[in-house]
Image (cartoon, rainbow, N blue to C red; front, side):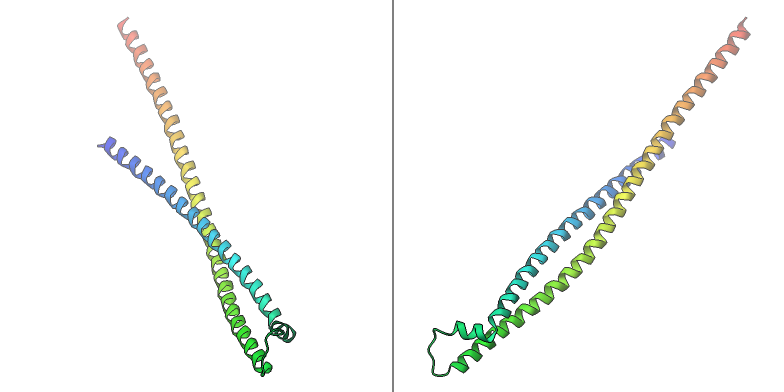
Length: 167
């Protein structure tokens, strides 16, 4: 009965250690996934900032004038105003996308920090379990060795007494 109980406890300990190892792996994978997403969002942000800078430059009156220099029209003011509105609308869209990307980046940075903490905690817990299991094995090894010495000592004592009684 005791052997079965010990075996069941050993199996439960092994499964618990395996579950901790899987949690650490999934937390580490989550950190990697969030880092990749963060890099992607940062790249998108850089592209949007570059486009915003281009639009800011293009929307200047002298640049609008220069871009329409080769176009002949009886109403150049209306043409310049239409071009300015078009650039303004595009600029507003890029600004909105940039704000969304910045919000996403901030959210991902917070999620990444939390995931790194969780991965660290799980890793520490796993290491703690390894140390604890190692110390249990050492205890069993030394305890078993001590028990063997006691048994040998007791056996030697018994043998010695039995030899005395025979004489």
